[in-house]
Each structure stands twice: as C-alpha cells, then as structure tokens.
Amino acid sequence: MMTDLAIVVLAAGMGTRMNSALPKVLHKVANRTMLGHVLAAAGGLSPNLAVVVHGPSAEIVRSESLKFFPYCKFATQVDRLGTGHAVSMARDAALGFNGTVLVLYGDVPLIQTTTLTALLSKIDATHPMAVLGFEAKNPHGYGRLIMAGEAVTAIREQLDASPEEQRIALCNSGIIAIDSKLLWQLLPKLHNSNAKKEYYLTDLVGLTADAGFAVALSVCDEAEVAGVNDRVQLSTIEEGFQNRCRTKAMLAGATLVDPASVFFSADTSLGQDVVIEPNVVFGPGVSVGNGVEILAFSHIEGAVIGEGARIGPFARLRPGAEIGAEVHIGNFVEIKKSKIGKGVKANHLTYIGDAIVGAGSNIGAGTITCNYDGYEKHLTEIGEKVFVGSNTALIAPVKIGNGVNIAAGSVITVDVPEDALALSRTPQEIKAGWAKKYRTVKAARKAAKK
Image 1 (tube, one colour):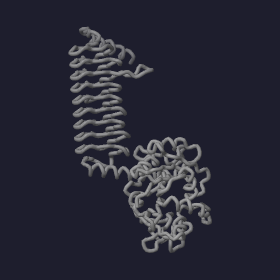
Image 2 (image 1 turned 90 degrees about the horizontal axis):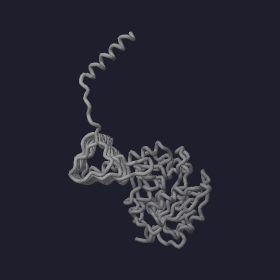
Image 3 (image 1 turned 135 degrees about the horizontal axis):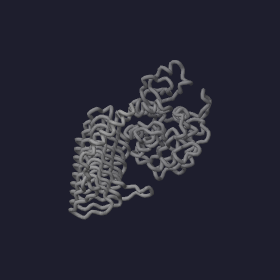
C-alpha cells in the first residue's frame, strides 16, 4: 500500500564512547558522515517529510542534514529518556502529516534503500506497523523479536528477557515503519517500567497488538543494521562499507589489482574498464571515465578524469582537477583546480595549480605554476601543443600561446605569443681549469689541518 512517507532520524546520542567533541553521527565512513549515509539511503525513498531529532547545541547536525534534505525539519531531545521519548520529540515537526512514518538511526550507516523499501512494502490495512529484524550470530545485547506465526507480538530487550527469550536469535534492528495516526496515539501510552527506566519504542509492538492489529516483519542481513558506539566499531563499519564498494566496482566493470588496498569514498564514480593498481585512495567527489588507468600510490580527491587517461604512480589530484581524455599524469605530479586538455603529458615531478593547459601540450619535469603571491591566487594559461622544458617556473598571472617552446630552466614572468621560444637564463660562463685548482687548494688546506 503506497502512502505518503515521513522519515524520523534519531541523532541525539552524545556518543561519549567516541571520546570526541564531534557528535557521534557526524563521524565519517568513506568520507561521508554516518548521518549522511542514513539520509542518502532515505533519500532514495523520496519522503514527503524529513525530521532529524538531535541533542542541544547541534547546529552542525542541522547543517549536515540540510545537505541531503533542504526541507528537513528538526526537533531537540534534551533529556535522553529512551527511543520512544526521542520519537515523541518529532511530533510537533510532523503536525499535519498523514501517512507512514519510518524511524531510522543516525549511527546505522550501512542501511540500504532497497531494505527500507522492502520494510515499507509490509505496511497495509491489517499491518499498520512493520519491524526490521535480523538473525544475529551472537544475539547478546539485542532486543529479541517474539513471534506468533509471521507476526511480531513483542520485542524484549536483553535486560528484560527471560532465559528462554534470550536464546532467540531473531533480533530487532530498531528500525520501524508505522502509520502516523497509530504512532501518535500509542506513544503517550509508553511507560518506563523496565530495567533501564526508559521509554522503549519497541513497546509499540505490544501496544499495536493490543489495539487489534498485526505487526509485520521484514528481515535483512545483520551487518547492514550494525550501529556504532566507539571508534573500534567505526573501523569495522568502514571495512564493511569499503568491501561493498570494492565488490560493486568490480561487478560494474573495473579491475582492482589488489582490492583490499583500494579505498573509495561514498560518492566515487567509476566507468567501465578502469584499472586500479594497489594503494589508491579516492577522496570525495571523484568521477573516473572509461578505460582509465590509475597506478599505485595515487591519491585523488574532487577530480574528474576523462576517458583513457593514465594517472600515477604516486600522483595527487586535488579538488578542482579536470583531467581530459588520454592525459598522462605521472609520478610525483600534483594537479589542483586546473583544466588539463586532451592528450597532455605531465609525466613527473610537476605542480600545476590554478591553470588551464591546452590539448597536446607537454609539461617537463620540475615545472611549477607559481599561482600564489602570498595574498591571492592567479591563473596560468598554457595553449595547445606547448612544450615546457624541465625546471620551468611560470609566474602567474601569465599566458602562454599555442605552439610555444619554453627552454628548460626558464622563469616566465610575461605573456608569450604563439609559436615563440621563451628563454630566461643567466648566460653560461666557463672558466678553464678552475675545478682542478679548486680541488688542489681544498686538499692542501685539509692536509694542513691534520
């Protein structure tokens, strides 16, 4: 049954075990916050309303949420009195909404849109509530799902479960979907007569059954609903996400020579027939075209790489790098905020920043664009089919015309017209026999000291 959808994301936890000044949900997995992962998964459902429940003084949580849902609303949970209490804080923000409410957790970053879609599909007239569960390898610490046939009749938390209930392996993820009218009717009926003296959202299952309705079950893999309480668990989640990215990349047509040593960001985009050698790291905002080779020990962030390009080894592409088709960026070359035209070669020991390099140009070893004057950044423009000799310094702002040759060791401070030779060197001087005399004098002085 398709209805309007609202998501409520619980993100008020302090995360004290993270030992961090940063709210727990803003710690990152694959260069995206955990909250961002959850909101991205929910975004695939196109909800009509999004509400994030955060703690006091959490402007940074609001800012992160608005990146994914510009229409996001917020609620503050000052006292941490349990998950049921947290959801109740969202009521005012959801006034006027009628449909299904999906409750999510900001520290469960591996949840996928397909899993949430399957959960929502369980909601109908006789099942106004659905619970997402999983089979736990070790159920200790999880709430157990008490079943009667295919319906969930109760969720028993670890501290409140009987010895027989503690042997149940079917566990609660915490994620639920529920009809909004029923949710707001039942939340005030929650009580805190339990071991933790908290208002459990899980008690909605029993209240729903008491109201004469059935609660449906949807099941997912345990790893997908793993939460994070400390940095050890965060590293485990990172490993799981990276493995998912690696598998996805290879199945989509990329070759990873040593998959375990390649690290992706959540938004990394790879074309077909991409080859990635060991020890490559992708930061946020990278798009790689078809047929690209990325050689070992390269670091790429905020860059677009055109078809057939060859990057590395030991290359660094920084934000704003636009690499054209069939470009070669070699070892110890750094590109920042620059457009590199088709077929350009910069094979070693070069820095190109705040520049435009025309198609077919060749940038010699040791070339640098001197783009910063201590106060401002300036543009270097290099035309097509330009040859830049080794150890050239281009002092921006400067413009090099098409077809120019720049002699090795030059310092270019003024514009160079098309097809010219630019040469800036101190005239070479040769003093015959000087080196021999120098050695003789030095040797004599050394001997005298002894």
